[in-house]
Image 1 (spheres, helix red, strand yellow):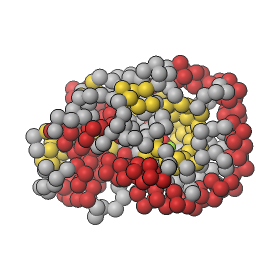
Image 2 (cartoon, protein in one colour; image 1 turned 60 degrees about the horizontal axis):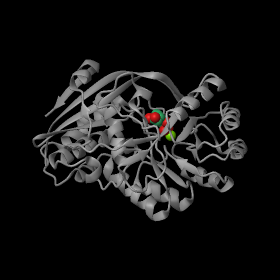
Image 3 (tube, protein in one colour; image 1 turned 45 degrees about the vertical axis):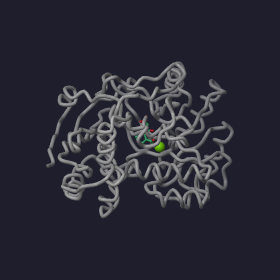
Image 4 (spheres, helix red, strand yellow; image 1 turned 180 degrees about the vertical axis):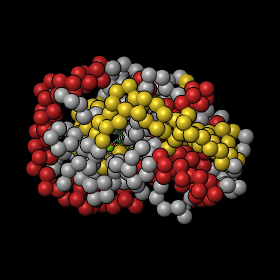
Length: 368
Ligand code: OSB
Ligand code: MG
């Protein structure tokens, strides 16, 4: 295989509802899409970096720069056997996992299309339907939060995650537990707490949460290990895990009992699968995180979620939760049972709507 050409596009899309986390609030997304021509086939990938470096160090602009000035030169003209080799060709470039993952994913899509296979089968997926959860942002009031939870439950979603931050934690969770005593509920702090806040996190244990996601620093494995020893509730790591080695360290240290895997954060399918396999061997359940992706990134998340150890509902939700109109055909839909049926067509199994993508494009560059 050889990548002949990559079209980079930055598109702009408005979220249906403003999304607030402990690190910021967003209503307009800028997303980098990659269209890769691999031999005679086209594959699509999405760079999940945000507009700001508040979730991770990468941004859409650093990704653009690294793709154009380093990733493309490392890949251009190179012959390789499978999409799984892309990671090795990029090994000299340290970090920038989201930029790498976007292109790797596009090559996987192309390889699967070329072989006439669904991408999820090519990566070894084993599930025809995936369980879905929702991630609900910080709301102005507890009533609005309860309303959003009720709507998600009515739509069928199997588990509810709410974002927390200091000042928006114990009381909103208490309120939800009063109204919804039996739902599968969890919280995500996006690194908003310090070790000395542990008594407050301990108070959350009264509400039998499925897990607490990333309470401490984005690179603080040791702190999470110390905190996990004080808590009965499983800690789930997100921001902390960028490599297979960090996943191993987290497990060995006891820094988490559950892992959130995001393709972008770990640099693509190759590493995501290795972390998945490691967790499976160690009895650590995983689930697929989300980054407010467009349909392209979401389609990849659906594929990844078919691997056997993705046993917990992920943040993989329907197109309409994010966008009035998505950029793929058909849109992603969630069944009343809170699942997504995995598509059976080749590649990601959804068709990019090129005309709509062009309309939304604010920047474009062709690498060849
Ligand atoms: O921490 O999982 C996170 C969105 C942007 C950045 C980080 C996170 C999130 C979400 C949204 O929780 C998940 C989704 O795409 O629905
Ligand atoms: Mg998270």
